[in-house]
Image 1 (cartoon, rainbow, N blue to C red):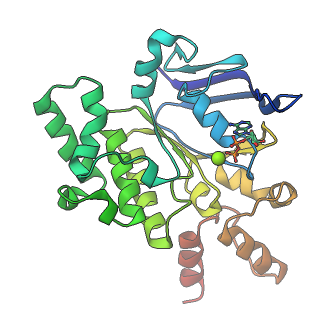
Image 2: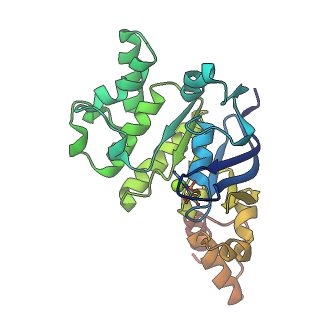
Image 3: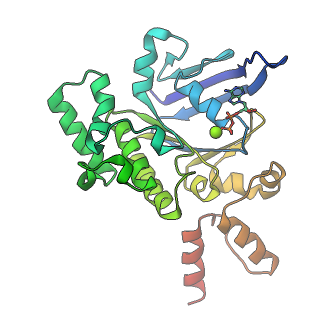
Length: 280
Ligand code: ADP
Ligand code: MG
């Protein structure tokens, strides 16, 4: 199947006793995600990103419209576990996602709950730990690890369930720069291995690494396209209180001084390569 996630006319309202009007967190959103693609979702706080992610994973169900994961309607209760196995989720706070006192037990938790047989669990745990470069730490206690390491264990726990898609909701927000780098490296590797990646982030340099960027504001999709297309619209991005990647800002300022920088340069590494080549 070509489209692993289809979101059709999605509206989601939080209903709260203490509020007269329900909060419309998602306001008529249509998105379709290609199998194997890497999409970043950006938007300021409160724009509806987490609500969207939870609707994909059936943690929340549409107020109206529909969400399909590999053709399965998230509103179909009988498909709940199948949907969560196909589309795994990684959250912001690694401490809230780790449940065991030993790393490898934590990674085994998901497949155990899926009823996978013990020998297969062992294989999956080892493979997942290798995939996130944490095999050597498998006997350690999670609370002794760094934030980046913990988040990689959380990712391993999801990979061990053999998902086709991983939704990561600001997975690097609580990490230091090194931890962020480690986690982004793993995310890019998983994408290369064919897993569909949906990365919610407020780091524009991370979004620049995706194949497609979706910009949300006030529950709506307001801009989407390749990172080059989206970040070329710097004025629109800034108008909704978001930044552009460092390299985009730098390119803009260099062009104002009449220094030519090609339009496709949006990543810091590309900028460094270009300048190094040109001014050698
Ligand atoms: P983001 O992840 O982009 O910061 P959220 O999806 O968390 O945005 O929130 C979208 C909107 O829904 C915001 O206005 C937020 O205040 C509201 N909201 C989020 N969670 C709840 C909740 N549990 N109850 C009521 N309103 C909520
Ligand atoms: Mg959020």
